[in-house]
Image (cartoon, rainbow, N blue to C red; front, top):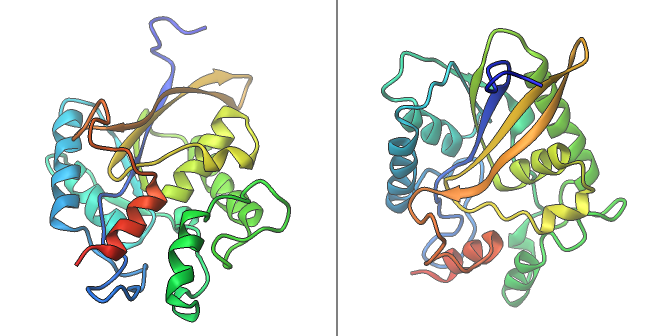
Length: 232
C-alpha cells in the first residue's frame, strides 16, 4: 500500500481525435495517412484543456499522423518531446476496396465480433491474438521503463482495447465491449508490486472531455466509422 498514492505511476491512455476514413464517394483512404478532421481538433483541444494542470513527464505516440497530431496538441504548452513507438500502431484490416459496396458496412459493424476466437482476423487482416501480443509487449516495456511518473500514451481504438483487456485481466473477447470514442481518455495507475513488478489499477475508461455524460454519443466506435462513410 502506498501513502496517498505517492508511489504510484500513472498512464493517460488516449485515443486520437476524429478522422475521416472515407472520401466523399465512400471510398476508403489509406488509414496510415488520415489527419484529424476539424471536429477531431475540437475534441482534442477539449481534452487538452482538462489535462492542462495535470503533470506529464513523458509522451508517447504510435507513429501515425493522427496520433502525432493529437499528442502534439495535448502537450503543446509543455517543454516535452514526443516519442514514437510502432508497437502501438493500430490493428490492420484487409482491403475494403475488394469487397462489394453493400458488404462494407456489415463487415465494419461486426469488426470485433470474433475478437476472442483463436485465429480470427480483424476485417480479414491482422489476427487479433497476434496483434494483442504485440501491443501488450510494447505496453509492458513502457511500464518497466524507469524515469517517468506520469505518462501520456496516444494510440488507437483497437490498441487501447487490447491494453485495457490486459490491465483488467480479462480475455480478448472483452475487446468488443470496451468502447473507445474519439479523443477519449483512460487512466491506468500502476501500483508497485514485488521487486520489479507493477499492478494496474484502472481509474477511468473512455472519458470524453467534449461530452462527459455521452449525451450525444450513442453510436459504437465502428458505427462512427460507418457514419463517416455515409457523410458527404
